[in-house]
Amino acid sequence: MNPIYKYEVHLPANLEPGKTYPTLFTLHGKGSNENNMFGLVSPLAEDFIIIGIRGNLPLGAGYQYYDLISLGNPIREMFDNAIADLEAFIQYATDKYPIDSAKRYLLGFSQGAILSMTLALVMGERLKGIVALNGYIPDFVKTEYSIKSMKDVSAFVSHGEYDSIFPVRIGHETSAYLKDLMDNLTFKLYKTDHGVSEENQLDFTKWLKNDAEVNTNKE
Image (cartoon, rainbow, N blue to C red; front, top):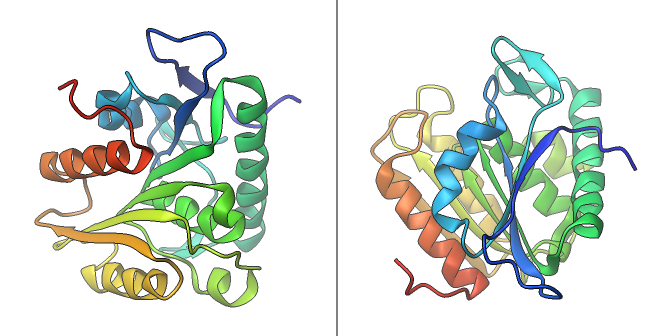
């Protein structure tokens, strides 16, 4: 299979033959790229395989995974295609690299967070967990998509209190929706605009290590 997405893969330095590893797939925001995301998650590179997925649609100096009719209103066909293509990519990577299929995580910012939460809804317990930073779940996903059980899926969801793109009420609405579907949800607010603070980064990296049960005493 030729994946539709270009990507960067970072394998743990001391890769052990025959061993599988928890894996973090990153999904960037609109107009960004996979390298910017790696800067956020590099503290996890000793313990996780990290795969940065680049959006397949150029946008300025960066990329996106789908286009919009208006802010918060994806072009439905493009969005649907992105979800199907990303799900296929996750399986492609699982077959190609020493990935522990029981410990697959998604981490996304903005457009990437929207996709991460939607993929968790449609893939259910085929994912171990997600980190969704400053995103939302489109209404059509909630009402028209086939939602799988998320009882054993973990989620760390965060939002900026002063987010000027997606107002903080969206973060609260997202948390309330997910709380009804899953047992292991962490929701946090940070005193930021549409971005990721150092405190936010420290919190989600610690959360990921604990959830994946990797060694947290290396730092």
